[in-house]
Structures are given as C-alpha cells and as structure tokens.
Amino acid sequence: MKMTCALRSTSIKTSIRTGALVLGLTLALGACGAPPLQHGFVMPENGLEQVPVGSSEEQVLLVFGTPTTQSSLNGKTYYYITQVIDENPLMGRSITDQRVLAIYFNDDNTVSRIGEYGLKDGRVFDFITRKTPTTGTDLNLISQILNSKPAMPF
Image (tube, rainbow, N blue to C red):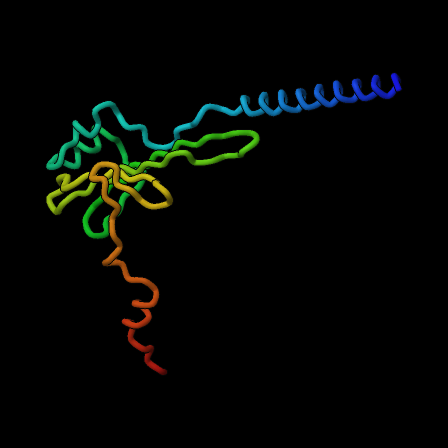
C-alpha cells in the first residue's frame, strides 16, 4: 500500500511538472512575437491640419508625398494606405488595423473633400465623417445583365 501511494505521488508531481513546462513554453513562444509592424503610409504630425479643403495638389504632395495609389474615375483621388500587422508564432500573421486616407480633388485640382477609411466589422468606415458610404449607384451583376443589349448575330 505504501508503494502505491509513493508511485501515485510521483506521477502527480511528474504531471504537474510537465504541465508547468508546457505552459511555460507556450507563454515563452507567445512572448517571442514581434511588436506590431506598420506598413505603408505614415501620417505626418498635423498632416490633416496642413491640408484643409481647398488646398492645391502641390500642397498635398508636399505634406503627404507620393500617394500609394490614385484614381481618375469621377475626378482625381489620391489614396494613402496604412496597415498594422501583428505577427505571432502561435496565431500567425493578422492585420489589426488598416486605414486609407483618400483625398478627393475637383476640376481645378484643389482638395474638395478628405476621407479616412478603415475596416470596421468588415465594412469600409469613414473615420472623419463617421458615415459608411452607400453603394446605391453601383451596378450589380443582375442589373448589368438586364440593362445589356443583346449581341448581334453574325
């Protein structure tokens, strides 16, 4: 009987040590993750205050630099994109924040409006106006099919 208690006591101690070792290794590996990395555009201090609505295109380029990308549909727009990525050995790589600064120009190349967008619950969200843009003017697949003209037979 004494032999059984001694074996049971030893196996419990071994189990506790093994569990503590596994927990310690898990915490150590979790701590090995790099701090969040910022990729892309870095907003200069007081950048939005230096480029109010009505500023010239040259002023925007002086303050923010070359845009990440630009669009010429429905007027000229500059986009400055930033992503914050968290790399963790256990959880992998994940995007923790994404922001897009959009600067819209009117016909005389002055800033007509500024939008700052991000991912919030999987939707584009404007952080400046606190409004989510609607897509009422976009054509979906069904409306494109219904509005298309039949092809001419040859």
